[in-house]
Length: 193
Image 1 (spheres, one colour):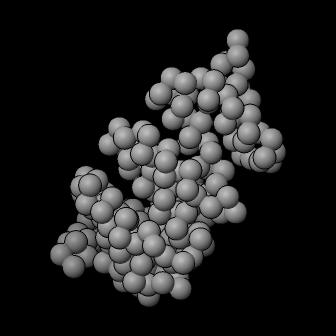
Image 2 (cartoon, rainbow, N blue to C red):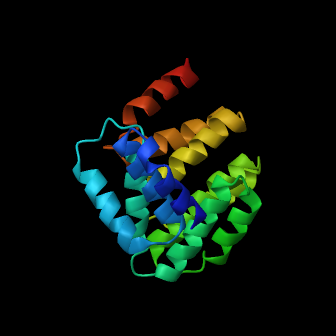
């Protein structure tokens, strides 16, 4: 609440309306104020602000709300984990994510697992990250990202180029319309030359 009061107090000094809106949206997200957040984020996204450096952040917040819309309690926990991450308290964020990992919704489970794997990467626990990625449901929207992340872990962090090539090739074969297709092809060319 203090953050919201502070931004309101300094609103006249913030010359950029978009910056104010973005800060306000993030504060509302961390405060779990879903009704007001929906109003602000919908209004913001309707504007032609795709060139704004924070546009994707707001889109990400909105997509998280949509993903969890049937389970507000889990959304509140998820947001709490994001706040802990923002505060650079990774282990606390991991604990919170682990506490909500037992949900029935496949997409939520997969999102949480993907986020957990990225946190373990930051902790330099590469094998733990890979093990979590291996448990993401193959029918999930996060599966392509999981395979790509595994390929990059093997490629750049574990220096296991053979395993990385296998994952890159698998992605090209299984996800022929991937937005990562060209980047993967270029990386494969580098690895094989």
